Image (cartoon, rainbow, N blue to C red; front, side):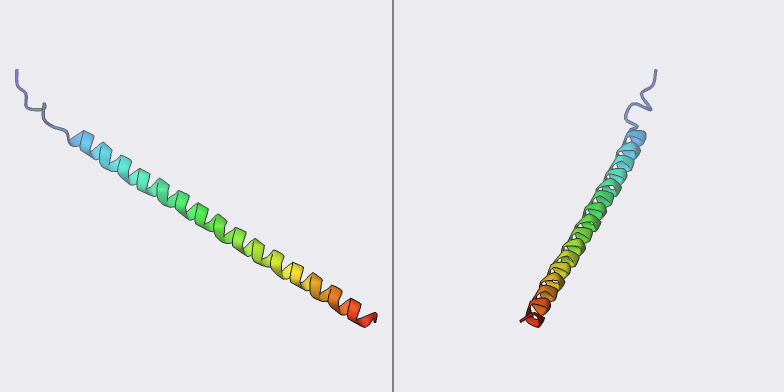
Length: 67
């Protein structure tokens, strides 16, 4: 009986490398998604601010014309 394959952990190490690679990819995908959602939220807030400023300016002009 030989123990030639007893210390052979190549498959284990390869599986660990694949798992680490998939984990890095998953974290990058999550980070990219959160970043894109953050940018979309900032753009939405900017559009909302512009809409509010336009509404205030419109009301100011209408009130100035009615004096």
